[in-house]
Every structure is written in structure tokens, then in C-alpha cells.
Length: 184
Image (cartoon, rainbow, N blue to C red):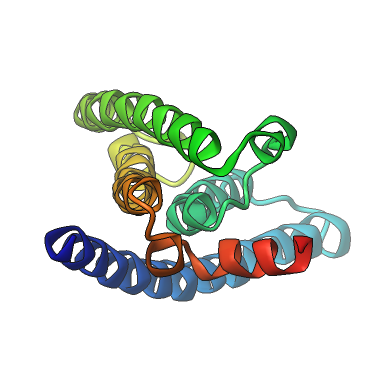
């Protein structure tokens, strides 16, 4: 149990650090994206001469912004989910099903990470039309996104194993503990 606790602690530390870095990068990317869009609106409607690059730049910034926060959203359970069935099951069965689903999701994330790296490598063969950078730098967002989600998935799997072993008070995320307390 001590080894499991140590592993969870290690992955929690890594994930919290990556989440903090990702959040800080993401808000800068959002600010840049909004600035680029406002620049395009100004040039198009005030100056009457649209710039060729803002749409593509804003799209690349949005892709990277999403990649920076996807791991945190996954870890917090912020993606859309239907969990009525899990809530209706007994605690152990619910934990076992959650672990199975996390393992399947983990396998998918491993595959997506490798596909994303391959896509990144192939991206050096083409350039973005208007911002004149290699598309690989835009495509790099996908393996970054999937890898941070995979790290979160590993932490969640380890936590679920701890819950299955009867240590829910030590291994459940703070959001799960709050949800359980409000349900009672």
C-alpha cells in the first residue's frame, strides 16, 4: 500500500505541476488569440484591408490552448460524462468499472500519443499557408495533449486501485470526496 501511495503522490505532483504550467500558458494563448482576432476585425472593418494570417494564427493558438489544459480537464473529470450507471452501482463495482474504463482509455491514449508523434514528424513536410511555419509545430499540440492526458490517466488508475483496496479516503481525488459528502 505504501508503494501505491508513493506512486500516486509522484504522479499527483507531476500532474499538478504540468496543470499549473499548462493553465498559465493557456491564458497567454487565449489573450494572444483574442488580440489576433481583434487585429483582424480592426484591419478588415476599419481599415478595409484584411490581413492574410490572423485566422490561421488564431486557429493554431486555439489548438495549443486546448492541448495545454486537456490533461487537467481529464484529471478533474471535466469532460462530458454520463455517470448515472456508475452512481447506481455499489462502491466496489463502481470502482472496478471505473478502473476498467480508465485502462481502456489509457490504451487509447497511448496509441493516440504515438500517432500524434508520427503526425508531428510528418508535419515537417508542409508549411502553414499564411504564417509560414512548419505545420509540425501546430501538430505537436496533439502528442502533448494526449501525453498529459495519459499521465492523468495513470494517476487516476492508481487512485482507483487504492479505492478498490478499501482506501478510498486516502486515494480519492478531493473533488470525489466533496461529491460523496454532498450526496450523503
